[in-house]
Image (cartoon, rainbow, N blue to C red):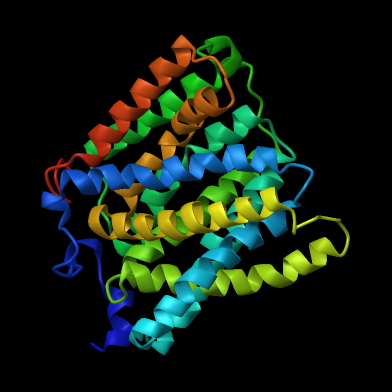
Length: 325
């Protein structure tokens, strides 16, 4: 089997990890800590985005962060010569990953928020581990364990407890609408990116995968941003806007995506995506620290349940521990 074909047939338990990447059966404590870093950094998007509301339109904001990230990653990619490791037959899949994880995911999520409530959007978005696990089973044959299912259910319940403010009455009064379907579609986009990342990293390193998908995604975003700016005014030369672009490009886009892809390689998409549900928890913590909001008991309870779910679902003895379903 050629290197071009390898990633299309390899399944989760057959991936040949390099010496520089840990096996999930003996992942270090540092790797578990790094697993939480991407959702923590991504939760800062809420604060930065809120500060830029009315100043920078959404597509342009998304474009700015990934252009900054691409300007860091692509020179390194070509300087190191890593671009030569990318088989030409991989580019259709890499383009799809760029369109789903870089270009479309955040934009589709923002579109859904126009037609639904923040509570509904957060609840639907917390189904990301479920959609990712299903896609991982369908596309790369990654097995689902009872521990992982329990972890997903617990983390989902924790998210629900936070967004409903600990009120079952609020949850019982929820009504779903077309916006929720759009948000759910966004979860499948991110799930597809995460699952295909594992498949592509059967051959490519996390750095090469991150650089290529970021570069392609930025190219797709640029014309959309130009079109948006032709109808909406934005002063992009202001100091706070430039600093926001630099922060979003360096941390949530460059560093977080790189660590996320490495975590997927170590833990697999189903286990890694479980920590995605810590986003609301980190958003609460950052809001208390930076926005002066009061920490409530229901937020503490929900946060502890989320953490318990993540720990149960990810701290498996090996990649096939627990009973497969």
